[in-house]
Image (cartoon, rainbow, N blue to C red):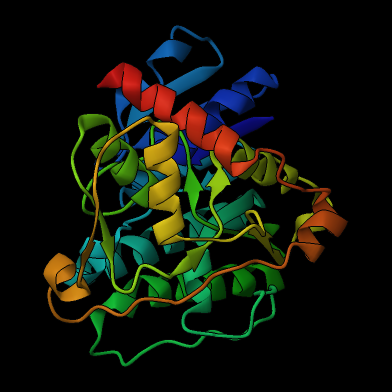
Amino acid sequence: MKILVTGGAGFIGSHLVERLLAEGHTVWTLDDFSNGRPEFLSHLQPNKRHTLIEGSVMDRGTLKKLIGKVDVVFHLAAVLGVKNTVDDPIKVIEGNIDGTRNVLELAYPRHVKVIFTSTSEIYGKNEELPFHELSGSIYGAPSVHRWCYATAKSLDEHMCFAYAKKGLPVTVLRYFNAYGPRQTNSQYGGVVAQFIKAALKGEQLEVYGDRMQKRCFTYVDDTVAGSLAALKPEANGLAFNIGTDRSITIRELAQLIVKLSSSKSPIVSKSYFEAYGPGYEDIPAREPDLTRSETLLGYRPKVMLEAGLNKTIDWYRNRI
C-alpha cells in the first residue's frame, strides 16, 4: 500500500516506517523534527519507496498533497511529554487537537484510512484495573495542567469516532509505555531512556513520588506489531489497547536497569514538586486488558521486559 506516517522520524514512528518498508509498502514520512530526528531514518536511504518530508501536520497544504497520494495515514505526530503538559498546556492542546483535525478532515473526502495513535493516559485516574477499551476516563481539575495531554487525546478520539460514524475508516490505538532504541531521553518523557542514560554514565537515577507507581512497559517492536495489525478492516471504528499486561513498579524498574547495565548508580527519591513544580498529579497504576486486541487483531506482545531492556541498553551504550 501507499502509506503516510506523520511523526515518522520519532521514536515509535521511525520503527514503524522501517517495518512498513520491510514489508514492501511505499511510505511518505512527515515530521517537523521537534521530537523526531533525521538520523533515525538515515539507514533507510536511499530507498525509492521512501520519501522524507520536513513539515508539520499544521500545514494543511502539504498535508493535503500527501494524503492525496496514499491509502492509509498512521497519525503519530503529537505534542507530548510530562513537562510540556505542566509548562506549556496551550502548546499541548493546540498541537494535538488541531493536527488531528487536519488529518481527519483531509482524509475524509478521499476515504483514506486513518490509524490514530492515542495513549493509556486517556484512562486518567480510573482505579478499576485492568483498563479495557470501554473503561471510563477520570481526570483532575482543569486548573491542574497535568491533565491537558490526556484531555486533548480524548478529544482527538472523539473526533476519530465522529468521523468513523460518518463512514471514514478509523482505528484508535492506545499505546502503553513504549520503550526501546531511539526513545527520547529528556525531562519531557521516557523514563526507561532516562534511567538507562543515567545508569550508563554512573549518575543517580531519580525516582519521583513514592516510587511505587506501576506501569506496563512495551518494547517498541511489539508496539509496531500492534500498529500494523490495525490495518485490518476488522479494526475500523474501534479502539485497541496496545501494550503488555506485565506490570512493574518504577522503583523495581530502576533497580532492574541498574542491574542489567552493571551500573553502580544510586537510586534516589525526588518529589513531584522538585521535578515539575506545582500542578502535577501522578497515576498510581496502568494496566491494559488485551482481550479485544488479542481477539480481533491477533495481537500479543512477545518481547519480555528483560530482553527489551538489554537491547535498549546496548543501543544507548553504543551511542554514549
